[in-house]
Image 1 (cartoon, helix red, strand yellow):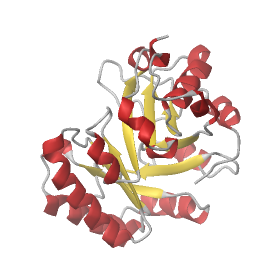
Image 2 (spheres, rainbow, N blue to C red; image 1 turned 180 degrees about the horizontal axis):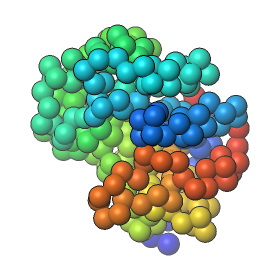
Image 3 (cartoon, rainbow, N blue to C red; image 1 turned 90 degrees about the vertical axis):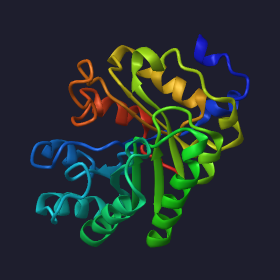
Length: 249
């Protein structure tokens, strides 16, 4: 199979313990079941992204405050959603959003969505990540590239999303050779449109490619018209049981 052609990631990667990184469900008013399920004991969660209104919004949202509070009380890491727009947003705009997330929702870190992948944008992304880390202290920074970026980005954050897309592409994907220089807990894979019958194969690919944080769903993007991450997978209980209850931070 094509995803097994790389020799850089050895068989030791197949014993990786996987956990969830949730890209961000719909608003808690629209998706109460989804937000409620996240605090079920034993769910192997690494973190959950809070996206109030394509960012923190203009004022504190009581429903999001409650949802974030329940997660934090359960010991679950909550990340504020910052849309980098592939470098189109300014440093000042991103930092302003970050301050609101911290002041209102007491987030534990940030998810930088639509993060650039090229080398020329690396200094500015690194500057942003360094500033965010200074605010957070022990916080967690995830760069949402969606594909393999320049290797230098691995030094700028705690984790990189190196795949985000449909199962039709993931099942034939190949891992970048440079990722073998880093442990699996540095990488995340988000895959939508995964049929229930291919779930085990998808989990096997993630382990082989060396990504310990995953989010797989059978929801589709309907040709780019909807967000496949906004609702819970139809096989949520099954994938939770497959991943087990043990999570290494």
